[in-house]
Length: 483
Image (cartoon, rainbow, N blue to C red; front, side, top):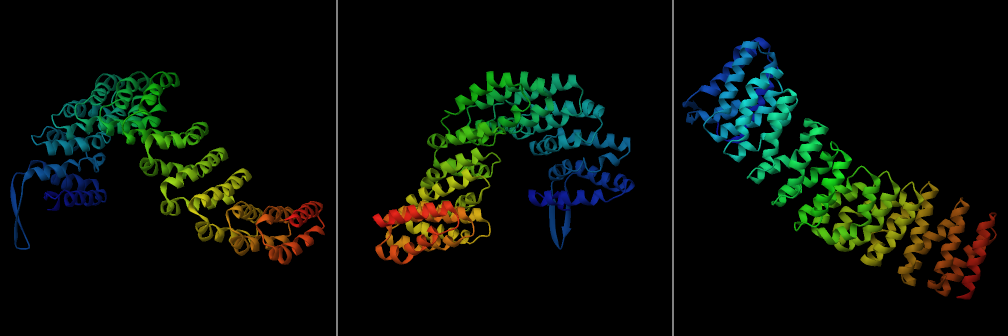
């Protein structure tokens, strides 16, 4: 009953449930019962039914729409004669007078054809595929490309070349932009189905290039987003000669959505050099696509690249973060980027950890010392007691770069205690870096702090067993005496 109703969601769920039931049935029961249900759905006229005292009336076209999605279920378990009957009923739906039924049949055509033997698909389904591809309703034609991809795996090479390929190329020039969009959305699948030779010689020139220059921004956007996948099936020489110039033109497109789509593709390129080059110019990309598109379309790719396996890519992202943060605002930054920035402090590469500390300095300059106190210093405080000495070292570096931004009182209240605690660290490298850090802070400390806090610690370090610690402690003491 439910597969007949006009409510599309209810009918769809009823069909899915029926398919699950059929998959559990034996071949004999499928032939005897399920095929009979499909037959009634395809051929039944108006009928009435009473449910819980309510008189319901259904018209037959809803049942035909429902039937369209049932043909491929357990088709391979049917005897040849019944399979032929199923194909005939499906062809009847492809030729239906109502566009909604033809659309439903076109939607199911590729999946149903994939269950058939190549001979049946070529002889019986391809002719109706060609008819649906030229249907007067664009909602029907929108299914053309997906069906062509499915049929390409079944039909002989000559049919693929002489019948399927021209239909795909015609769809790329269709008068309805939604049909052209459907071609752009399936460009990688089209190229894979047609093979590298046809992808290079035909699909590139007659589909990809025209779609990248389409009059509709939506079509150009989807073509740009799928260009990378399609390019995998084309020769490098052809890409350089034809696709690259089209992309250069696309980079100057009036639509910010189109420009953002192109930049997003480049950010996910397999080549680290390509990713690094686009990241290095992110400020220019921002000028081109605008901050709204940058945050909506490119930020996910930027966040993903924050964990890129190439450390130079991660470094380039770090250097751009303060510019991005200044334009996105403090709230957006805290929600989407703060954790990523703090995570860089623990990177395995020293250059990344060092750049991350300088990054904190620039962020504190923009968002203010109060923001750094609330969001950065607690993370540094937790790192300076970590069992890993590298974490303790980077917390010391972070304290050192943040200190110049603070007043004397702020410094002595928040940063100085952290530094002094590390003076007794078991690692000599950390102890002599404590001396160097105290040396840079000398000009910001008041006399009381120098005499009661810093002086005793430096004199202790001056007698350290390690020669480097002694040297830097003596230098810091000398500078402290001059202030």
